Image (cartoon, rainbow, N blue to C red; front, side):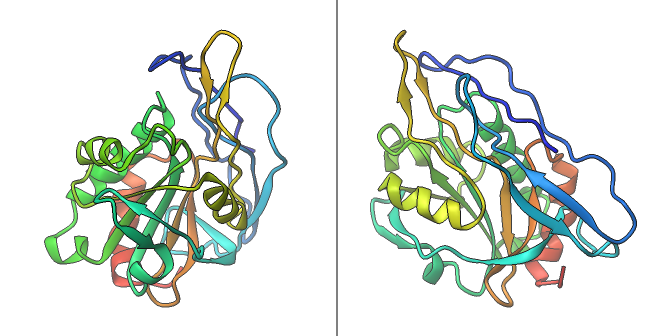
Amino acid sequence: MPRTHRTARPARTARPARTARMAGAVAVALAAALTLTACGSDGGSPGPAKVNKLKADSPYQGTVLGKNFEKPDLQLTDTAGQPYDLRKQTSGKATLLFFGYTSCPDVCPTTMGDIGVAMKALGAEERQKVNVVFVSTDPQRDTPQVLRTWLDSMGSDFIGLTGDLAKVKTAARALGIMIEDPVVNGDGTVTSTHGAQVLAFLPSDDKAHVLYLSGTEEKVFEHDLPLLARGVAA
């Protein structure tokens, strides 16, 4: 079971993060319990969301989901300040979906940076077939302009979405990803806690088939992205 980790930030500082890794696989089936992996402060976490890795012969190095989640029906604002319908505007394209926030000191920039490096390794045609979507869990601070500046350092074509946190929490919960409201602590620090899994939706049915845990290495994304671009079955 991956560990839960949290870090608190005054403005941009935080405790070092722990990375999560999955323990070894067993023959054909593997049950993985996904707890909340987060950028936040001390405290308890919601219960785990259960997924199963059912296919030991999958071509993907990420975790193959036993349940293929529907893409969330989520309408937010993109980095150009325009309405963005996640389900409609990513339909028919491989999509990586990650929930986080730009002030996160560890998991968010590491995860998005690794995806960015892997995306750059794709050919131009393959790259056009993959969407990378970052949904803010801290919309009060993550304005469209802030999101765009932050994402440009990782991928200028990455999609950033911000808006109603209640909508974001509902969409994430439907995928087994928990998000807590940002909390202002007594010392003025802000806690923003969120699940740190990346979900990959295939273009064939717009459903999530593969999951990447916090701490997934860049080489795993580099291996799997071409498969996602081609819509290879998990």
